Image (tube, rainbow, N blue to C red):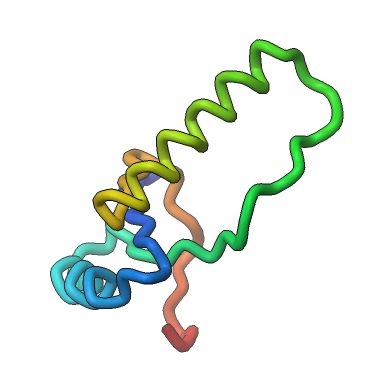
Length: 88
């Protein structure tokens, strides 16, 4: 299965979002999206404390990168079905 790079851009960095969308417009293996999160999500029930700490640490690192750089890269995610025909 094909993979893609996913850039998540901070919601307050629409300027950066536009630049990256233009830069990667012809690259089918790159998707650029705006961060749509609106606060912390509740932790799912279950799981171990060790797993929870690791995921919380990862989310904190991602949030820090979004605040300071305005973008994070999620490399090598599975490529979704074609989105052609959708308004973007």
